[in-house]
Image 1: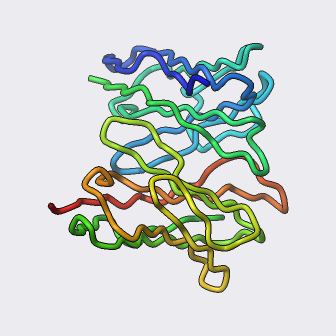
Image 2 (image 1 turned 90 degrees about the vertical axis):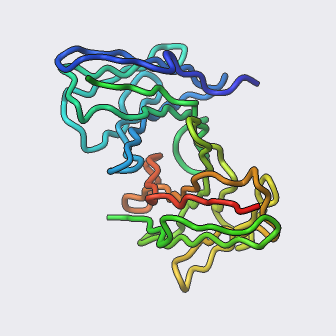
Length: 114
Length: 117
């Protein structure tokens, strides 16, 4: 079974631009979560989608948004990029995202904002 | 709010030596606990998980962890470390609100393991 895939793997953007990251979960997984990883803040939860609905949201500004499609693929968007948005963005999928469901992570998208 | 603490930011062990990485969590009637490993430039790989039952859980790559409710700990161990184990290790707990798991993982700050030849 193929793992979680994320595209692109690397991105370089400039301040003020927007960016869209994509995540394809493991086949059959309906929950997709997004995390931001930085050296200073560590791993922080952005949001979780299940059956095309945002079910949980972390403490990030509204510039960070996401969506999930009917095939469970998910995208996250960051508008008006800031230097501090430079990070590794990790996507994780699970069967249902709740009890007894471990999350499987993709390789991440490395975003650099100049 | 729930939290996870990994007291050791960096640990160095010699190849072949035993390893114990510490993890303490706060709150959680029945915590869902995980250990993940991350190699440079990679995503997170699940090593093992604890939901209930036997407090000593076995994982991949020869790792094990023991859940101790009285100490709010979930320490990761390996009897003999290999050079390929050098990586960053994250302990995580599933967030609970009320008695329900939200699906969100709360991570510790990570422990970087260096292995000396």
